[in-house]
Image (tube, rainbow, N blue to C red; front, side, top):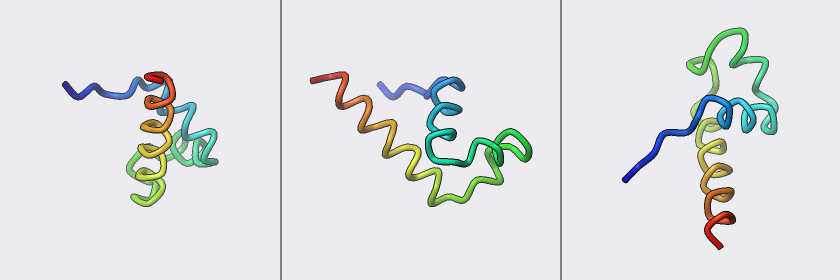
Length: 52
């Protein structure tokens, strides 16, 4: 079952990737797709660590 990321987690990851200001000012639609992919990869890595 796929779960959605919480807004808090997405915001935290956006801060780590340095795009939170873009999200805050313009919304998620303004974030480049490549960066969104990096955000997802980072979230997956974190999830994998918690499963170990």
